[in-house]
Image (cartoon, rainbow, N blue to C red; front, side, top):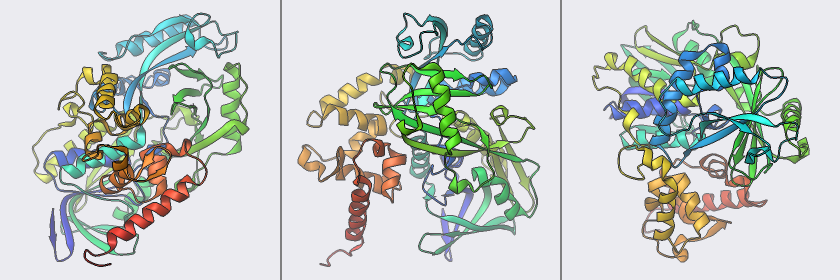
Length: 518
């Protein structure tokens, strides 16, 4: 990274701090390229933190004959699980069979295909289940006596973005959050961009290549930068989720298919809750202002009530979130049928630009690898992809290389940490292990008693953790911590967010006082 006359010079400017932008920045930095990543809000503020939080092949995409996409995603499931076993884990799904669905033999054949499209080392095969005897049958209505079980994975989506950004930064990338790319134009073979910080300070960047990973804003950003419309058309689809108190007390998730063909999941969430989603509706509003509406909440409750014995009403919802998925338009009549595959558009009209359209969280690593492969020749870079056999920060729980053991024996890692930090409550150590992996040692460096943890700002949230997040994970607000770096906001009492915000403001004020002043 070079800085000449106030201008930052780099190989690659990545605009967009969601999973695709962070993944591309990480891959490029790991190949020795100088990278600047800018994001107008916090990392994972939009689509990338509003997913159903699954690492999956997409069982329902088989219905639309998207075998290539499903196979690619199925291969990636286990690659990702091995890379970050602290924020990902295998999850077993149960699909109750409803009389209105396809015949059982047809569903079983689809699951056999799902099992067979990619090699599995970590995830067990699908099977038929008797819901009268299986643990997942207890909370369901008695009419559901048979079903099917299969495996996919769960992921903390917002932390996945942050870990990619951390890895990029540790490999030399400059990560700028709350920094808007105000303008970008090609000139003399380079991209000249103006970035605007929250305090209105402008930064100038001169980049050899630029990546447009702005998600729902990708088409508009590309047109503003190049003056020409893209050949790709984005269809914005709103997906909403609701969170309620636990509807069941077992470790299985459910997949329900509505008679209209749409899929809804009910997933164990944050120990005390159940996550239900998603909706798929066309969206034409501002992606910055997306929220769930009453019809979506009613729809999710209605479908859940079709299966569970315990009735659910909108009044039971304790939290909800919505995101806009920028999907590649394929003329599908129903929003739920639009392809989740991605398109990479590379062009060079004076300076190379790569725009990312579409995609799903499961295939982000492959997307990033393909994107940097496309950019590398223009940058004279001959280093190949490397992320397929690399851990994300904190994922090296049993050595530097990804391993099946790290996934299968993660509980042992947790237990070892609980013994090492026996002076901390075991449940808190487990939370640290699942959020930070091996970086727990960095978080707790120099601490040997609860007094060393400093102030308990909110129940289970100590100053040492907040300080770590502010120093190493680009945290600037209480919401960054409570709703993206963690979901502590679900567990804390009223007023906790305001108290945390005040503590952080005071901490920043102290840090800004020059040394030696009183």
